[in-house]
Image (tube, rainbow, N blue to C red):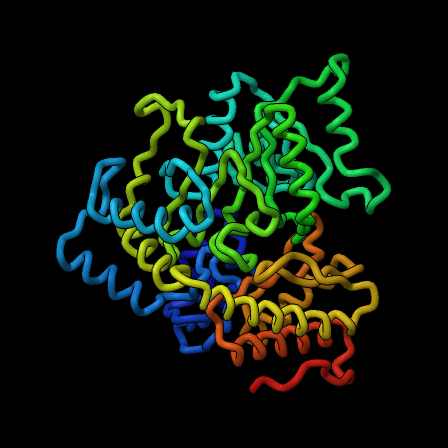
Length: 428
């Protein structure tokens, strides 16, 4: 294959295009097309930034109309009608029905921006520096977010020591051999422990990059209760698991939590546009004007699509109920596929889920075979030992079943068992 500008000029830091070398030129719904017209089913969804698929037609048309009428695109933190409409819609459809009273901060356009703002705010409010995070966590690629990330390869990229943070065991890290929070509770209650009281604990309810580890609801509730007793702030990083990815709008709803700070990004725009929110309880709003800012925190195109996406998908329970049916389909299909490899197990929750294989090489081989069969699916975990599925939340059953059939065939090819019969029903 001849080299092109991507090979000769773009940095070696790129990654996804190394595994998926096609040049994608068009996208709609759960599909992408290459320059030569080859169609790929997308179970990657922009790493969770495209929860409603590519180029949702109504959201696309809103952008076209907004630009055609010279709507303000860039506004820093100035007031615009698009920003007003988003805030009013978010309050009415998301916050008020869930009885969540949060101030909304626009920290910058990406997930790592909202994490940085959350860490900074927690330290400012409490006057304490230390942050606790969890084994196998991933919170972003800037220095503060890397300091609370567990992945050693990503941490090495910082080039300097990452300080003022410690890692504690995530749910079931010791395979049930140790009581939950035994270590944390002991050091918080022992004035001689030598461990500084932290400003906050940051947690993902599902560790998207860390292997699709999903925390139990009672574990999350116990964590919240423990932190409240010790006046430590709870930060939930819902960048990847939020906006419906686990079945409800916020991934912590099922646990009945009311976190002090919530990080939201990826699919909040509804269209894959850069947008992030940092949500926090009103009493934590101790910022001085301009103390934290960012040039691209006023993305009005994202405000336009975000407001309409909330109305389209979250104004009542109909979409959430349909999503629950698709989640059941996905889980049933994955369970049947996992039966082909003894020792495999289902990981994750909702539409942030996959299969963990006992041989760490299997997941990568399955993903490569899936690409050959025109399906985009990635891997997750410290050794990339989990095949990770993130279909669009509004995917049709036929397309979901088609993707599952490709994964099954890819697994059989990767393990040399193509003669085995399929365990899935044929796509309708």
